[in-house]
Amino acid sequence: MHVPFCVVKCGYCDFNSYVVEDRSVHDTFLEALERELAASWRGAPPVSVFIGGGTPSLLDPARLERLLQILARHVDLKDAPEVSMEANPESLTEEKAAIARAHGVRRLSMGVQSFHPHHLRFLDRAHSGERAEQAFAEARAAGFDNLSVDMMFGLPGETFDEWRADLERAIALRPDHVSAYNLTFEPGTRLHRDMQRGEVEPNEQEVDRAMFEFTRSRLAEAGFDAYEISNFAGPGGPCRHNDHYWLQGDYVGIGPGASSHRQGVRTTNSKPIESWAKAALAGLPPSASAETLRPRQRAAEALWLGIRRRDGVDVAAVEARLDLPVREWFGALLDEQQRQGLVRWDGACLRLTGDGLLVADRVGGEYLAIGVDR
Ligand SMILES: C[S@@+](CC[C@H](N)C(=O)[O-])C[C@H]1O[C@@H](n2cnc3c(N)ncnc32)[C@H](O)[C@@H]1O
Ligand code: SF4
Image 1 (spheres, helix red, strand yellow):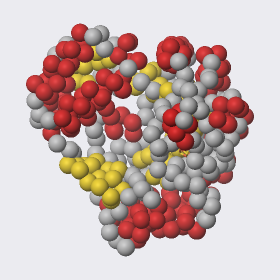
Image 2: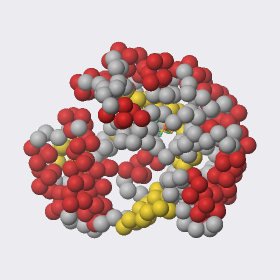
Image 3: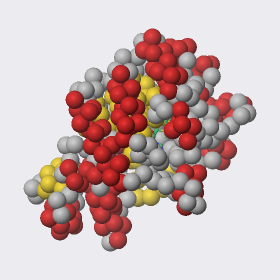
């Protein structure tokens, strides 16, 4: 479920989110959400429920409660194996955390990114490091025993020691899960434009590498399991929602810009809040595009998504699940990637090597290229 509102639009973020001053739009959003959910939910018990964004914690307490009540009309949140919500430090309060908890949210994911004031400013974040720590404590006080923290490294000008200090401060929060992303320059963002104009320079690759390797070793030492390139499971275990997505499960996306996937058919909702809401309120499907994944594309995506997981891809299982000759199509490429030392490939199971981990996007991109070309 996608909540598309943010206090500020962060310069690096290409997610479908907007700064909307007029709070009546929140009510329109909730009405449209209710209509879309009623029309598209088919009633099967979910593997996980994920309320993300944007910034779900930006909704005021009454509206947050209404959102959760709308969901509860269709999904038994108390029974769902995982119910997660994203929260930002500037807008989460103990009251909102308590409302979320009382309505069945059991996992909160807090966007912290950095603790350094100059980096937070550069990223356009609307909170301080101290506020992030406070919000984390408030979520604990509200009863959350599964709290995740999102951090980013490789920020322009960031030194290794700054990242080390950030990671230590994140670990000191005693989170139950950590996501640590290497900053990417997404086309269409302010950050990307600044880079093109020469106003911002990406960090040296060597510095990013050192940060990435340090992240893995330090989090391992602190008891976190690197179950995916950027995701580390502590006492809360891995995020089931992520795993379900990486394993090409079916999902229903509700809200502006949200995508759904059902058995190889992917639909994506209209991105602007107005056009999405107009369609949903008129009882029409608010999707802007639908594509039936071609067989090679589906196989390519299975490898591209799965290779990011520590357990890698059981290619034989993918062949059986999709009933497609994955090894015939991708075998030559996998042999070549193995020759280059990027993957371990024994003819059945595919995994990234240490070197492959550092260039995972390129390795995965090669699968997609084969999936698209033919
Ligand atoms: C889209 S945000 C939504 C959650 C929440 N609004 C927040 O700001 O934390 C999810 C996470 O994606 C990560 N993220 C967003 N854009 C990114 C980028 N360009 N590079 C790396 N990580 C990014 C951030 O760590 C962020 O916490
Ligand atoms: S990173 Fe989070 S707060 Fe910032 S614009 Fe994106 S969704 Fe909004």
